[in-house]
Length: 387
Image (cartoon, rainbow, N blue to C red; front, side, top):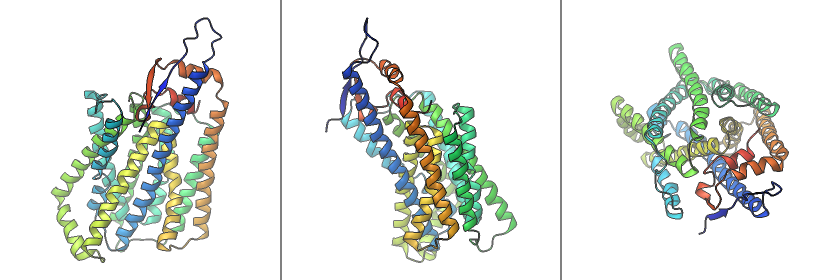
């Protein structure tokens, strides 16, 4: 399987200043590879988000309810990342973890530990709060992401992205209102406040995580390195979750839950947990790839837009009641997401030849561009990003 492609840049000495025809073709090929990676990562985000949502509901529908299990499954699938890492090693000349510095390793471990805390906060909120309240609080995440992106990565506010944030947040609020009857049995005021502040904390941490990762990725050499960083972060998060489970008796709780609580039996329980581990890992890898290939705000938009798809998944798979409010919420999700994509398309269309030439000239002549390393610099991404 041939993945490498040559990209040459014209010196343009004494010429008209135009990029050669060959350079244009290679630039187009580079953008094509970029789009391949983008589609793959969005499909991972899409499939992982929808599948993990459906499996989590399946787990709770059949009497599962362990906060530690919910925390642990979100990160324990890190061995799956070894497959793409080995793939890149076999089909490219890049050495494993070759771009890592002590600072990158330290940041990956630190962010991984913070992700572990975020997973625990999310699980606590999910176990204590009604579905409606949990969705309502999480709906503010996208607005938080817009603010943190403005501060950390200087995200420009345009009409399309502002409109998208407002519409998707409104969609999430309507979705929460449509689930106002879902209230856990035995919910006390103390549990409610514990779940509320846990969910707020999880939303704020994830809104901070996205632009921070975008800032770090600006110094990352290639997509393969993103996967390797994700492996380190997920290992750190898993260590934190495993230590917490061991200290709090979470593993014995899993065993008891599988034998005495889950109403489909131990085999179905462990299959549910196993598939949930896989889908969460696919979802998080898709998120990381989207942030690297686009922006933190785009990653947040894509994740929030999937809330409406998750609702449809519940209707199709579990026969959930599809109320008028859910229909309005789903329509707003589609509208907000499409308006954002249209805004990106218009910005791409407005890019003139001089902008493309400027990005292409930055690349080394005779540089080998590989599918795993097509984003070895952020020049190709710069062609597609918003001004």
